[in-house]
Length: 332
Image (tube, rainbow, N blue to C red; front, side, top):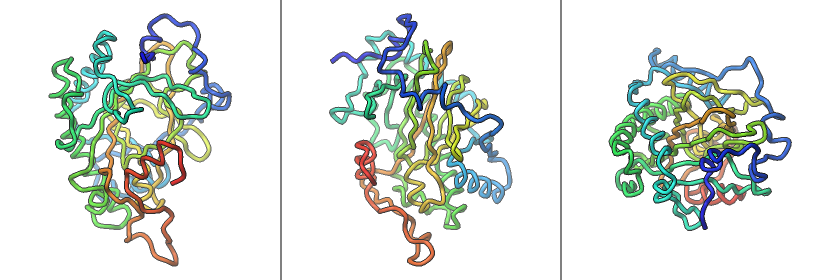
């Protein structure tokens, strides 16, 4: 079956949205506007370590989300990453289709358009490209874009930086919980932690007030580290309201995912978030998901639970089992 791509639809000169993109009334951006005057936490990694640990703990327990500055990734590398991603989406449709994925057969990597699993079969206004970046043993370079030809080189360089930043963040999060710096990483699979890249492309949308780029969800990852282009659109849920996240050049957007919420026994929150779309401009984001290997057993850290004061709030299961349940909307 030939998939209809959102990008192709958008550039075919639509004036109004096809019905499958129109959200139920309560979900439409025009009826669920973000609150004004609230800004998300911004944390500089150039501060004294005890200050960073405290700020990260506060952000993860109150928001499940924060922006990181002074992270040491060259702005030139972030720019190159964005350029090669934009160039891929600028290729002729036929060339992109050579990378098409097929989630129905378990082939998640490659070029895709999300067929959502919600009850009224609403579709999100986004195309994407998804692939594993590390570890090497799990990386299938055949699925990586061959054009632009610098894609692999740039993405591998970015992967090294993501491994470094992920390690650093997991240490800060561990120390914030009062455990040794290596604890979260070792429970998430140590050197076998997987990094997955997802490039989201949200084309201009004729009726952005009726559609969503991505519907409200939490990430099943441990952490998600994202860089967007300069078109804002990310909203995070805080205290019963949506909060719009402003663009901050070269900042990393860090989401706490479900696995960290489970490991921290609920001390850290997996952030509910969504993205909206723009009438005039294409929005793009580059999300890197840090996830445990499928066989990793994830449950509340033993150091954080006891029978009286802090019973475990989550069951322990393999990441594969967690993922299966989340995809199929089954209780965890």
